[in-house]
Image 1: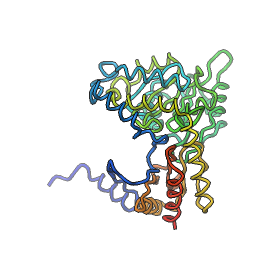
Image 2: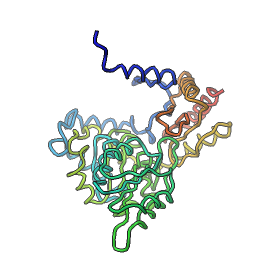
Image 3: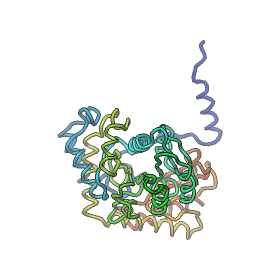
Image 4: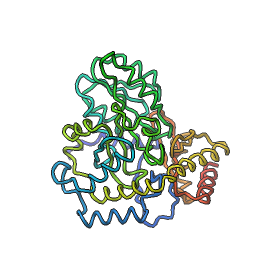
Length: 384
């Protein structure tokens, strides 16, 4: 019998089992009774009736899918409305919607880093930014996490265009990047009469949580609308939908329409997702207190868990990271929480490059005080 050309996959599977690192899919039921601190529905809008009804209306009007790429048949009036309102809400000149936040990050890094350019990338960046750096034709230098001086040093080696790429809120530990200092390093890197580097930030975990009424990390740092700043967002976290977007100066957005492969060759975002995101954005604009509530819940989770002796990272937005002794114990801890009715995230190597396993908790603006009490109690009891 012919040997399988995929025998190497079997060996990798055995190695994952030995290390306790096997990942499995766990489909959730629509009527699940689990208290969810694992998903990224920071503002509690994914099931809001205005959001779900907007998705249904869009599907009835335009169909179940976009039917083609944005440049062919995949752009609807909803896409244009969403782009206009996203840019206006976040304080940027223009916006472009993609089928996912991942696609948006691949687009912006590859399209803004041609041959001869330098990409300076934070060591803690999300996988989508890392993959964008790998695919870009420029040269990438990875620098120490959240270190503006390391960025300055790296930019000192550039001989052409440069971009600095960073998450605004890092997805594993929930800590915020020093955006104002990074912007200063970018601007100081230019010689007299020549431009400095551009700052490209992934605000997946900042939109809806940081800034005035949830307008995002760029707004909070005083960088929204700056001519040398580009930001990406996801529509799948605070806005409870699906998709992503790039926000920035109009010439940059026009360039992406003409040069970004994940825009040109990808089917457009489904109209239902665009409609849902637009409805969620309008809800956020009318209920800005949701952003403050999400931050307050995260702070309360951190304070109460650390008061019980657990090791956690102080949250800068809505993510609370709680350290676990080992991958196996993190997995058991998360499983015991689930058995007690609480869903929590469980991050283990290789998803976490620092090798530290942790529970990842996501605060939600719609979490009641009683639910917060319950969540804290379950986590503490499961740890014991």
